[in-house]
Structure formats: structure tokens, C-alpha cells
Length: 146
Image (tube, rainbow, N blue to C red; front, side, top):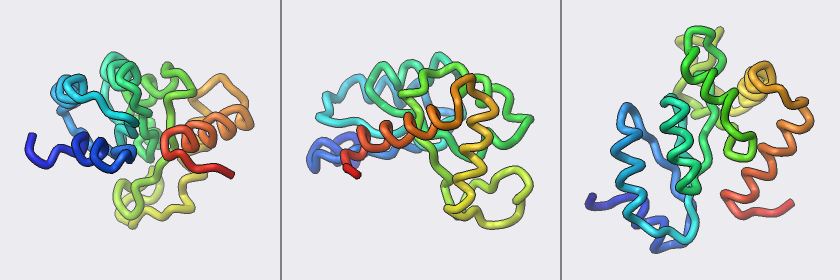
């Protein structure tokens, strides 16, 4: 692919943010062809458990966004509940992708807390453990420190 985000990530040694919509299998296949020094995040993930596991195996984190605030998003909610906690990152995709209860409004960064609360409802870990893991995952992927 010309202009592939993986190539830009490799050139600048940066994590990549990948947006895949109904192309998870093709994207994972393409990513297997690149040996990147760092990986990144599959943004706004809404695929299957098997697709998420394929990205995780490649070293990518799974972006958890407002989709999980919708009860009707049962496949995504189930997938996020089943994935290892150390593979998840929290995101809002502001101003796009409104959360449940805010349809028709631009999304806002401060609503990340609502995504986190929905994640806590889906997961067996304590809210503190989830918050710590999300922070550690963010530090690992984006290589920043306190």
C-alpha cells in the first residue's frame, strides 16, 4: 500500500493509529508483512474476538471507545470483556462517535470517563486495576512517563 501508516511509523519510530472498518482481516494480513520497531492502536475497534486477538498477537493495542456504551453493540462489548486487560487503551474519538445518551452531539474528551465506566461494567477487575492497566498500557504504547 502506498503511504501505508506502518511505513510512516517505521520511518519515524512512532506508534501508529489504525482505523479499520470491516477490513480487520486484510489489515492484519498487511501488518504481518511489516516488521515495525513499535506498533500502535487499532482505533475504535468493533471486530470479533478472533480479529482482536490477531492484532494483539502482532503487538497492537485495542482502542476501546464509545461503542461499548451501547447495549446493542453486544459483539464489541463481549470482545472487550474477553480480551486481556493489558491489550486495551481508552479513547473517545472526540468529536466523532457519540456515546449512548449523546447521539446527535459532538463527542467531548471529558466523556472518556463514561467509556471507562462502561468498561468497568464489562470487566471482572476492580475499577482501580482497570485504571492502572489503562495508564500502563498508554505509557507502553506511546512511550511517555509520569
